[in-house]
Image (cartoon, rainbow, N blue to C red; front, side, top):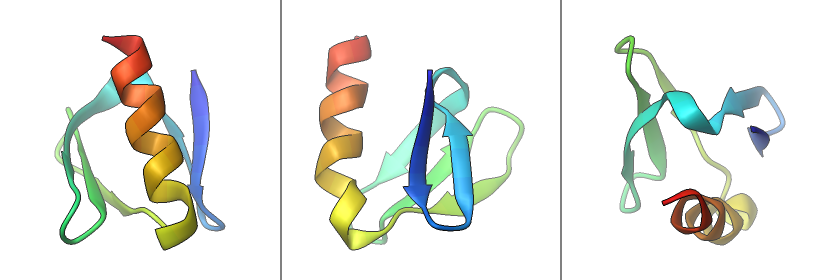
Length: 52
């Protein structure tokens, strides 16, 4: 499932390894990182919980 976490990033939720809510940053299984906009952070957490 794809998710727009910032105006610059469209991410595949199944490739997320870690989400740091304090810095609002995503870390992926390949080691790359992406930022999450303030407005999208709650929606992202809800989607990640839904996937589990």
